[in-house]
Length: 124
Image (cartoon, rainbow, N blue to C red; front, side):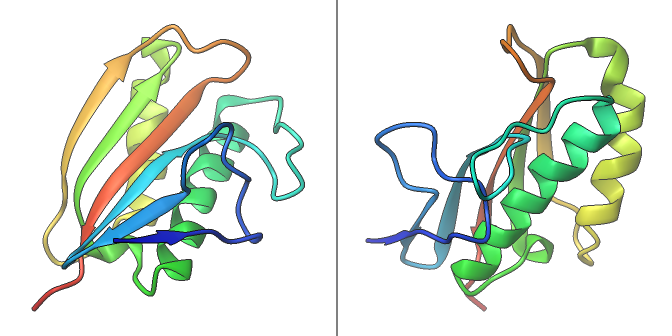
């Protein structure tokens, strides 16, 4: 296993890796709407969602992959009413020939509206 860390994405919020490469898979930790300097992105849901998906994409790139290799994505929303807007934004970031499987859940996030994690397949 190999831990991934990049300063182009928000830092991890605790004692865990931004991602771990294990065999042909990259496991991306939950990405939240923070800037690389740790500042929280506040404001409209769309701003927060773009920040979270951008962080996820940057960690994927640091691991030598991209979101087109996602096989599974987890999306966690504070407000279920944001589901339709999240779906539109999601499509901007996951454009692979085979769409990933996805679970979207409403959760009690505190201070932000969205968190996203993913598993990428890097084999052939």
